[in-house]
Image 1 (spheres, rainbow, N blue to C red):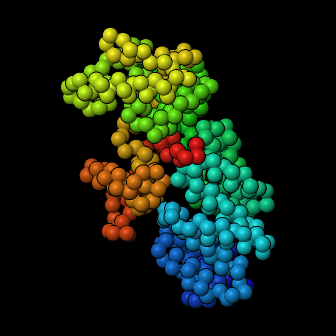
Image 2: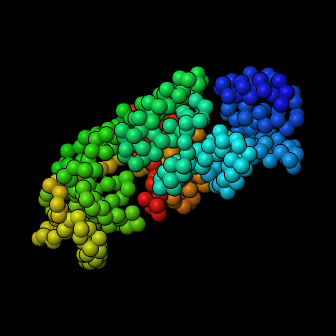
Length: 406
């Protein structure tokens, strides 16, 4: 490796993409192309960055497997930054194995971190945690340790292990100081600020109050029956009943919880759950059927009894009933939570992250666009959507969790 390539690589490692470009901007050999691509990615020109990295991969010879693997890892990071979540994860895994076989453990660890970040984005928390557990950051340079600890913190927040998340952020802040890269330090500060912002809204006996993440975590082991609007669960301290695939039943459970300790009238339930302006006999029959199904699914945590006016929820072990809802009154809060990372997302990537159909996501985006909440640029396959952050609220609790793995 010649001196200019070495100097450009050191500049990139120090977070100075312009300094790197000053050294290799006029060169078209494979190492220079790769470094130019990484520099352009750091500057935000992801389209040009991908083109350069792919040219570099093609330019490396057949005996330079490690260099081509590094290009694959770089392209994977560019795809993640562009929120192309369907970029082939198998290619990234193959590149990681090649790097490990050639002794490049730092870039192999970076490849593993990219895979974990992708899993975290799409809500596959079990898989992300399993993959992260195989990574030891002891031998990593400070910048890579920052990325590792930020991923640990993100996973801790999503798992409601807030002490773990804070400890990871403390480690990230220390590593960022050692790296001396202002952008990394700013990213750690943003993540730390999220932990001190309201994360949810609690409704108990008609009283509403905002909760911090620690309070949401403490609520899990309290003497309350929790109707969780984030994960579509009804649970107490020992037992969980999932209604993630039964939205109508969850809506009924939520209305019963709002009314507790009183009963909810049949007319109110039909109007709010079935959108019936006037409840006729067909609505009442449907309500009886759905209540029977709900009674069966909740039998381990609560009972449901019929009253003269409607239905009443009765916890088995809990002393009170609480409804956990989103901190912002926004019908498309999950989409805004994903877009709040400041990146430009395609509707297909949003659909994959939210475990929804692309058409459903597109309809929601169109509704948000009419109010100016989100912005669209580009057209066709190049169409991307952005939104400003949801100020004063943490968005981590709004993000989806895979229904298949959690």
